[in-house]
Image (tube, rainbow, N blue to C red; front, side):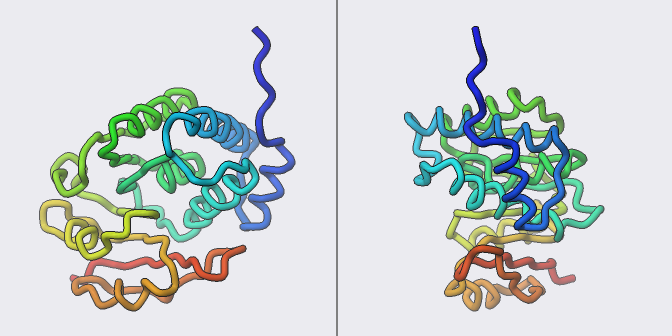
Amino acid sequence: MQQKPPILSESAVSRALQEFQISATGQQVAQIQRYTGKLLAWNEKLNLTAIRDPLEILYRHFCESMFAARFLKESDGRLADVGSGGGFPGLPLKILRPDLQVFLIESNVKKATFLAEVVRELELEGVRVLVSRYEELDEDVAPLDMACCRALGEFSSFLSWSGSREVACRRVMLWVGSRDIEEIRRNPGWNWAEPVAIPHSLRRFLLIGERAS
């Protein structure tokens, strides 16, 4: 049976990554192509993303997730993606940083099944899909070097969980709107870097916090 051509061309993926100053190998570009195809196929039955256009998915989900890789430290070996949904930002970061040990935390069983299928399809090692609410996890993921969330919205609860003695997360990374920044920075226990504007976006920022000692 003949394999379907990729939904996104190699040149389209490479061009988008370059606009975000992201360097990727040919294998990583191919993984993005395969991932996009699977996401759109499953999206017909699951509400993984409201975006239907492949190019917009590339820019909004993959590039915005991968843009954060430049702010990861070499010591950020254990990363949790909380409320992973369609796998963003955890899986794109894993594609760029194969050395990461990634926990994809997703309470929806069907979405977690999709995540496990993507991990299998892309032959990614060092990824665990945890079907659970993040508040119910502690020693399952601890200690964490980095906790990320892109579409969670429950910032105070997320920060309390991340900074708890049980989870012991050193750093957090949030994809946020400009209106959320001041509210988030009022949460105690974290030292915040200046917000980083995400390319091709007027209102979305990357906000990184270090747990206060």
